[in-house]
Image (cartoon, rainbow, N blue to C red; front, side, top):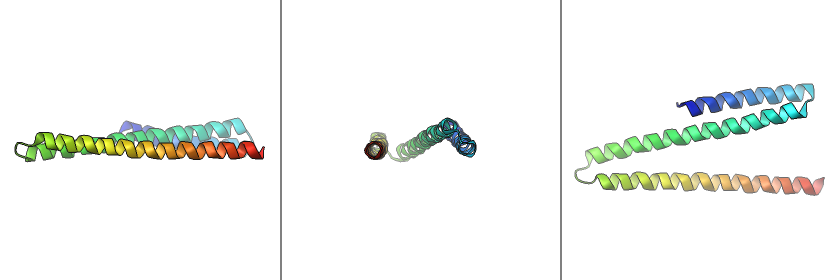
Length: 112
């Protein structure tokens, strides 16, 4: 576990508590700040997860390069392709979330 994962989990937990206190005392601003901290914590933890995944991929590619005879470039290419694939996957998911959130905002505006 890396520091981004730990900080993200802590910020998420703090945000949950902050949000609960805000709701309990009827303070929307405090509850909203808690929700914001939860989102930031989740993003930070996800970043930490991505870094750890890349680190593991790097170790595997290095091991493959060490084991392979005369083909370290192939292992590097596989590693780079894996990173590109992961980047594309994460970006696609973030685009999906952004589109979903934009749709929610539009729906809220129509009902207001």
